[in-house]
Length: 143
Image (cartoon, rainbow, N blue to C red; front, top):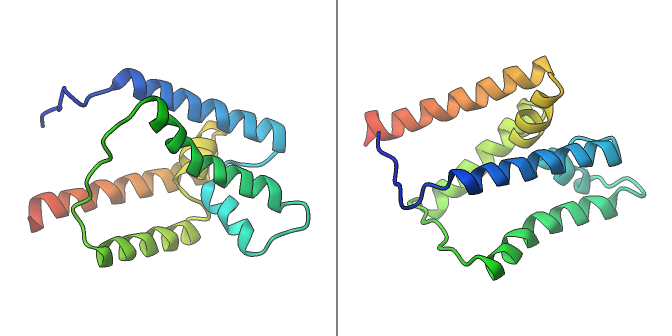
């Protein structure tokens, strides 16, 4: 394994992780809710009165933040070596996994682990292990 030192950014990655952790902690302290993206997005499908505003604001912030960062720190977006059908299938599989796992990576991996949730530990181990297995199969057995 080699590390692309030109694009290796441990400092920025650490800052990003700290910001995600701080935002998740502030969100649960302010709203008493977990900052799990699938749950926040799913709540828009069957909106509850008085619940729509904060969900839309949260999701708008997720979309607007990269655009705002791009204004101050232009970057080159990553290239994706997959066709549209593969991306659609991957998105559907992720959605299916969040339903089976009762949450997404942000809900379990960031918020659940920090609350020492056993269910989140199992879910995080499952999706991390599945991701590692998928990369191994795609890179070493199929390619």
